Length: 230
Image 1 (cartoon, rainbow, N blue to C red):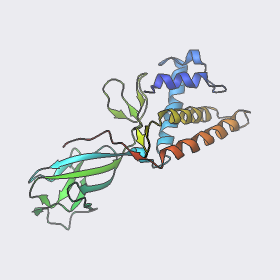
Image 2: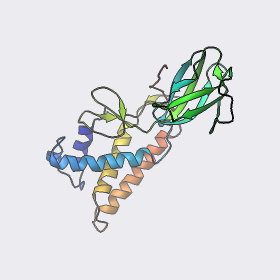
Image 3: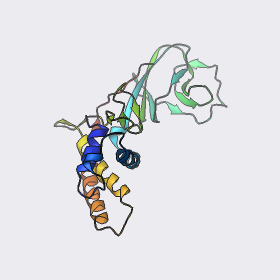
Image 4: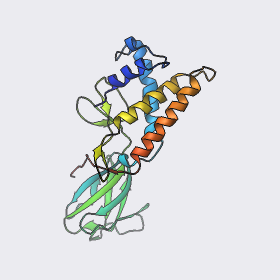
């Protein structure tokens, strides 16, 4: 695991970072500023490319007569029947549909009017079904205490969440490659002086590391870790 404290230490030890390693103790005055820049860089990088590792899947165990199910935390890209592999059709507006109809669900929409956002299946299931909900998650940090996903580093033991990747030969992790990019992007954002002699070299190094990371991340498939049974 690569924790927030580990990244801050790496940042402090990096030449020309603008941060002193001795000051990169979590919650110290200097580390708070470093963490602000770090979280900004994290949000930028994780949303820059639609990487395969951002895709997760939730399983809905749909029961007869129940059309409402909890949405995942992320951007839904597909809902499909796990037995037939058929994709359900997304309905942007369900006003023209008979919401009392029952049968094998073929459509879905997102109900934002309920207190808790729900996926609604149409027609209402007439039997028990299993549906897969594929979605992109944008929470690249795991809480070090309770293991929940979140958007940024808040505690020293929070750590990077990038699922294990695999190709035809091996399973591997991208976390260390990502940390290198994250540290360099943090340095770039912290150095606001474009006339500084280290400004452009930092950008150049980031660009090279980012190419390596993208090449490693894109041609592989995700090993899904997160599945809810609803």
